[in-house]
Image 1 (cartoon, rainbow, N blue to C red):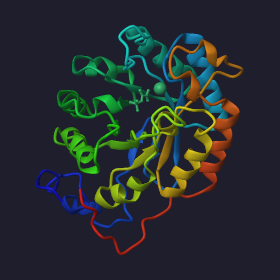
Image 2 (tube, helix red, strand yellow; image 1 turned 60 degrees about the vertical axis):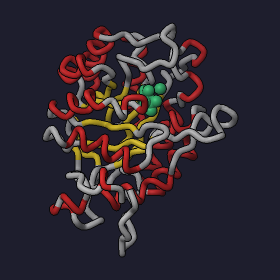
Image 3 (tube, helix red, strand yellow; image 1 turned 135 degrees about the horizontal axis):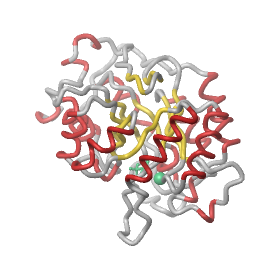
Length: 292
Ligand code: PEP
Ligand code: MN
């Protein structure tokens, strides 16, 4: 273990309550517990594009058995000319859709100056892959008492990812859920957008009691691959999934963001049924400590 990641308060060895690898720090989001025996499915559009689209997707997510709604009001886009999200209007749409459907909201915050504004509407703050080492952003998210979904940077080591979580925890907020969303390899955009790192799940769970969920949408970039990668992630021990979904009879050609990876509500219902039929697997003992 490197010096920099040996003394983190989020490690089991520094968090006596969770010394046993069989234990997980459960994180409650709008009444939904992440980190228990039952896995949790968070689903919704990539971006909030309009009120109707968001409400239609949210109703479909609810009908499929999803427990929380995801959707970006602020989008991290590679090109500054691409759709950047509806911003404040998107947050208002999400708040209204929560009122109508009862689903708690998970939404990304990109800018440290906007953390307070996003936290007013969100039930969980998402820190995206591109922002995993935006330390001022992590610090601001830690200062809120909102649960945080911390995505892994696409080329980050386990140690770097845990250090990012520590920036949030250091401010007194340990309600953090880690999210594996795929790492970059030579596959890039040939047959897959990224590779879902199944191997990291067990070492992460050994190292920290923080729950981990899997995002098969950004890990694959392809709606055809999402179901199998979702099942693989569950089998490997994630506590839940984050998935992008189309409107019922939605036209993917019309989507402004991540059109190729959105699954239909019918496919979502199959994934949710699979997730509900299994228990989150335990970690085999004895537990050798992972090298961070
Ligand atoms: C997202 O979930 O909307 C997103 C932008 O994902 P990532 O940060 O993993 O690319
Ligand atoms: Mn997306």
